[in-house]
Length: 196
Image 1 (cartoon, rainbow, N blue to C red):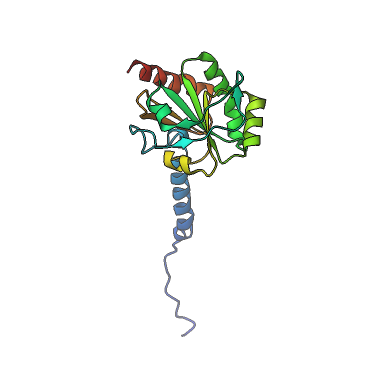
Image 2 (image 1 turned 60 degrees about the vertical axis):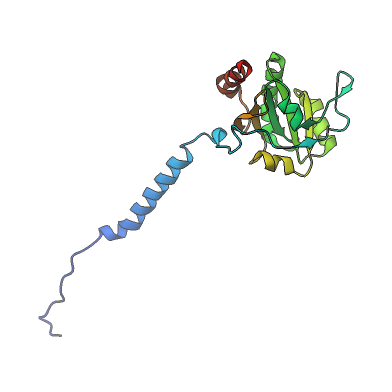
């Protein structure tokens, strides 16, 4: 090549250098919006509108209320009673401790029966938990191996279900209950279910 011949000039495409950054930013924005798009307490449940799963959970050994043993929890208890809130909890669950005062306030209103599924917990720890924080439950069924929680479609503890008088699951709340969720969502649903 002679000194007088110049190399062909290519148009500069500096914008190509920024293309990966732009694609990454667009994907990051999309993921961020999707993460914040929904309320995790409203995860869908295939069981809403269906009868509670078949179960017969034993009582929590040694748990008493007013000098009497607190009963376990079975399907028949939920199909033949009034409206029931079923709370899945464990003593080792930090959010369960956070929501427990809310359950105590709900129980004090005496508007609904509250039952519990004690999930993969040691009996001594569960009794200690309820002895320390209070016992809002009319029945506590022990799910030592977690099988019943799987049947209920539980993702993790705590989770709360609203069961109608006929044993049909009406609602599912994932995560710890708050006073706002109880006032704005749970109590209106309890009142509507009681009228059916």
